Amino acid sequence: MDLAILGAGPGGYVAAIKAAQLGARVTLIEDQEVGGTCLNWGCIPTKTLLASTDLLAKAREMESFGLELQGSVTPDMTRIMERKNKVVSTQVKGIRSLLKAGGVILKDGRGVLTSPRDISVAGKDGSSYTVTADKVIIATGSRPAQIAAFPFDNRNIISSTGALELSAIPKSLLIVGAGAIGCEFACIYRELGSEVTLVEMAGRAVATEDQEISALLARELKKKKIRLLTDVRVEKVDVREDGVHAFLSDGQELAAEKVLVSIGRAFNSEDIGAEALGLARGGRGEIIVNERLETNVPGVYAVGDVTGGLLLAHVASRQGLVAAQNCMGAAIAMDYRVVPAAIFTHPEIASVGLRQHQAEERGLKTRIGRFQFRGLGKAHAMGEIAGFLKIIAEEQTDEILGAHIMGPHASDLIHEMAVAMQHGLTARDIAATIHVHPALAEGLLEAAEDVHGEAVHVLPASDR
Amino acid sequence: MNPDDLKYHKEHTWVRIAGKKGTIGITDYAQEALGDIVYIDLPEVDTAVEADSEISEIESTKATSAVITPLAGVIVKVNDDLAESPEVINEDPYGKGWIAVIELENPAEAEDLMDSSEYEKYIEEEAK
Image 1 (cartoon, rainbow over the protein chains, first blue to last red):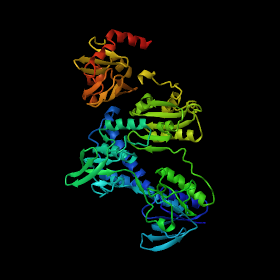
Image 2 (image 1 turned 90 degrees about the vertical axis):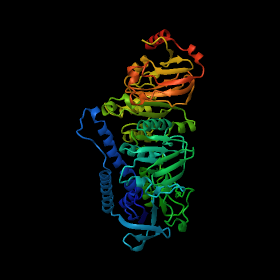
Image 3 (image 1 turned 180 degrees about the horizontal axis):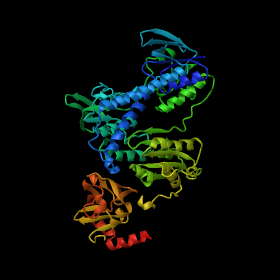
Image 4 (image 1 turned 90 degrees about the horizontal axis):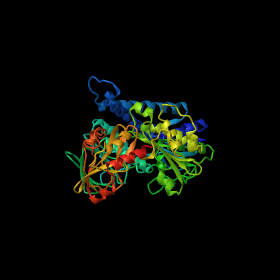
């Protein structure tokens, strides 16, 4: 079996290694860098910057921890970016050696499908050749979407990629779109000292999350003096000598040194030969796949962002695993019931399963348990008491339908809920499990108890 | 002691009436129950508020708690000093710890609220 994979991001490279393990001869074609957006311009570099700004935030609180600082702590963008580049290149090397050890043939170049079996490659070294395979997986990913009225100029109007490559801290930053990416950069640049304004056309920040999460995020942004404007659009942007002027739909005019546009992602389904193959695509340009990740063209599969579903690296990787096995003769369907996701604001946000409004829309009867991080000794010891944990359980069966966390280490804590949901566990199952004291996960124990109004460390209702 | 010139709401807020204006804060009992206050989400000036509705939220080291306005009206002034020093509410709940001033829709509605002795009885009951 010869398998060709277009794109070496978290979908493509994982599929490549898996298929090779199953005995395929795999050619992986990548025109930028292995690891894709996630590793090079997304998840990993933002978390690296965030590690610098988190430490900076902690350093600013040193005195309250009983530590005296001789001198001051100031961010140095050059070195912060150097560290980020080093972290990324270490990971890139890691993937390259994994691919090599797995026997995957990596081709650095741009591939275009000329038939369901043939990919014409323009190599980075100037070569051109054709890769022929029995089956093909398309994993070409996505890129930052831009606004036609003010496209990226990569100087004053930048994308998330540009925001990861700034050589100086902007005095002021206007962020268009208060989704996950916009809110993460808002926290990073605010901590570095920028004046930050978020402009969101929906009624709330992180509008796909539970409403209580959006409400708390709005307050945490306010505490950081990040301005959040909702229900408003940026209609026009003028680049002038003194910076960028943005004109909003409510008549306001805002000035900023730079504008970061983070309104979503566009799918990389153009210029890959989709037309020649007759690949079915949806209205947003996404490649349409079935639950086995097959496209409408026999033998051609697609995974990851380009399929337009949940734009998450960990979903792409799982799709890569499933597609690789299906290419090798299996018939596995993707299961999207339990997909945990995190937003790395400060504090972090994490969620899995249904939001409360989704449960209500589906007519489900629920019981909801909540607990505040400020009720935990560990949170006080760490000096991070903001946030809460919320568990939504089905009224009759007590099965956990969803969980929402905003607070320290939310992105790690959510997995207890993901495992519980994957196995149909109930709030009482969580409550019956002894949790370490003192640990942040005690908050999940308390929230699970609170589903039945039985939490021990909760004040009576009138004081909450 | 709870001042005699104030009116009290069962959600542990007070109002001081002066003509058409009412100044609002939380009671000594409330600040004691909350413990060390670390943040207050102040309301915005010009917001119209209903009686018995939430106008603000207070975060302490042990709880978060809604501030309920005893009376309806429009918020005309907020205590911006609390943004930087929310602990003032603990130190002086009836004085420097005031939260907002409301242009009252109907000052006469204050008659339905508790006076200081009624409020003291009320919190004794609550404590039981």
